[in-house]
Image 1 (cartoon, rainbow, N blue to C red):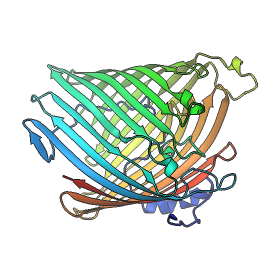
Image 2 (image 1 turned 60 degrees about the horizontal axis):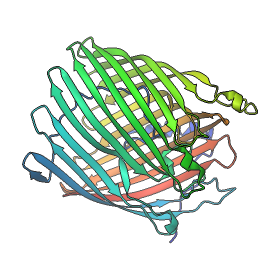
Image 3 (image 1 turned 90 degrees about the vertical axis):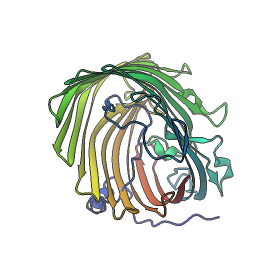
Image 4 (image 1 turned 135 degrees about the vertical axis):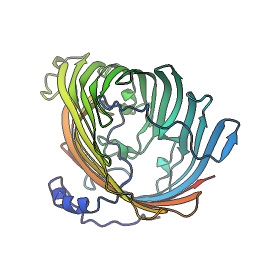
Length: 437
């Protein structure tokens, strides 16, 4: 079966895309959630979650105090470049992908202050023209989570386990010329929050395991599995209802399952600021320094002058502005630099711009969109490389009934890499249905 054909008039280089920016900003009321560039925990995104609502909400089954919400979905998606190839060294291959899914959300408010929650969505991907790419295990959505909140006095203790299993490589920017990259991520930890009225103190511990599921015993990607132990702290000063600021830091140690990889330790520290500019406009800013120390020194690879040094300093920072124009339209912009772990490199530095927006035309119909641009440097003992990636996502959702919703999306992604044969463009058109029982 042939997939849907796509226009070829989109810009083909990072310089070419700049003339499209006014057009993209013009359709900004059009965007969904966020397209993750990387999948490792970021060192500077400590957000205060203690003000979030508890587990109350819609449900379709109740067993005593336990609320259950079940859903079923089915999606069909046409992809014009399933292997993320450049079309020159290797031709592009298209396919039609069918994705059935089942979701569950369990909430138990066992006291007024203490709660338990479990949620996940399991799915399966069936490729009609490339059956060898079919899912080899159930996919688990990135928002899968098990959490347990306990409040006592001025303290809140949260036990959590966040997990996911993904195979589509488009979610990881440093992957090219591959159709399937299986990885299981599990982040188990606890957070203690101490509320002193004008001061909030937060201490956390996380154990993050990344298990790369290779295609066979000789797959070199299998050696990328790693474990990271991270301790984080944050102090927030509440200056007013509209202004808070503070300082945060982390200390992390990462070890790899295979000895050829380079274990390392990492420290981060910096200030942050939350400002409610108007009742409808909010600003968040953070910045800081990162110190990384690697087990193997650059002397182990003198022929690679671009290799990551044994000790490396860098900075990170971000500025995020969210705005609600009226009850119909809201948008956000994020710019900054992230320094984090990468799938194929020990350090990934990303300079980014991300724009999102949503337009609620009626109670049943919404339009959404996203635009992103990333300039990335990958560093390891083998050397360094750079690439640029940009893309847009356009979508619309319509709720037929209280239980049934349909979503149509179009996604375009382009990557321009320093390494030959790592460039690609990909178009995706999808239609999905979700039924809440």
